[in-house]
Image (cartoon, rainbow, N blue to C red; front, side, top):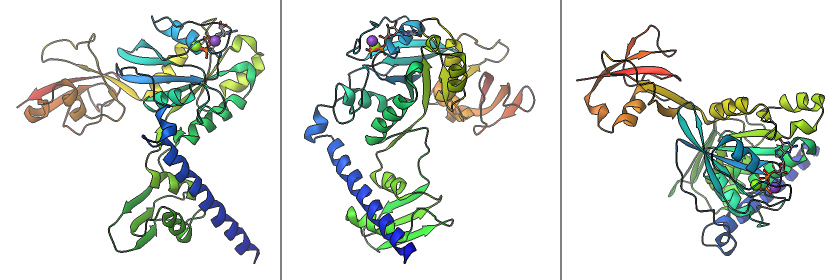
Length: 350
Ligand SMILES: Nc1nc2c(ncn2[C@@H]2O[C@H](COP(=O)(O)OP(=O)(O)OP(=O)(O)O)[C@@H](O)[C@H]2O)c(=O)[nH]1
Ligand SMILES: [K+]
Ligand SMILES: [Mg+2]
């Protein structure tokens, strides 16, 4: 009896949340009235990666842009100093990383307060969100901002749920899981799908997901982004507090005014962007250490070929690789060999 009651509550709540998610989705769809005014700022994507600075007003976003790039963005002690998107470029490890200074956002941003929607629209286009927080203001800012971003479908530091979902023309529902599910079940999935008027589909849970995560999968418009939390103004708090903040996950503590820990911040940005630099070398010549190629972690020799020239793969015979990805230097490898940061490669054509 008791168990049934809990289950009934779970179903009720699960379905309610699914309805809400569906409703919110309609609000965000392009063409709908409320979405129209929430267009992003018009800034060209450039460089090897894009980082968006998100934070409450006056946490020091513009000060950071001014410190790390040659672009100037007005910074002042009053809130909402920045009213538009200001792009700058960080040069690091031979890569050009576009850093976007944005207006501060406040609670209710997702619902249209201030320039919140525009800011969030830009954040969605970034490869990394740097959430800037004021070290003097505790952790509440982080929770509020995370909620704002979640409410418009941005998931920070989370993996896409491992659920296979395919809508079908007929054949009814097929539900399977590769492991014991503890947070969701077939009945719940069916109820949620009916809410979307989906009666024919194939669903396979490959991990123990919640019904909320299943809703994310049906919507299919969620963005999963890495996020680095940066606590600024550590010159204003006790050493004990700095120590505590610095140990939080995915966190860097800095002082933009005093230029403290900014090198470490850049290291972490590079790591979060998962960038890799690879040097090319011609036979009998020294590697071209001025012109490294910027690629993503997990890239292979094939990716390197594409980065050099789109027809390179068709003439590829083998490659010689020096560096940490090679078992010996040089190692002779094929197209599927994984490259590491700062490896050197010489490509031999047919
Ligand atoms: N104490 C201290 N103050 C800082 C630091 N970094 C920035 N500030 C100050 O914080 C205030 C706000 O800085 P901004 O760079 O304008 O902040 P913002 O986040 O861009 O603000 P909005 O554009 O209004 O959202 C300025 O008075 C800065 O001098 C820091 O490391 N320590
Ligand atoms: K400000
Ligand atoms: Mg600013």
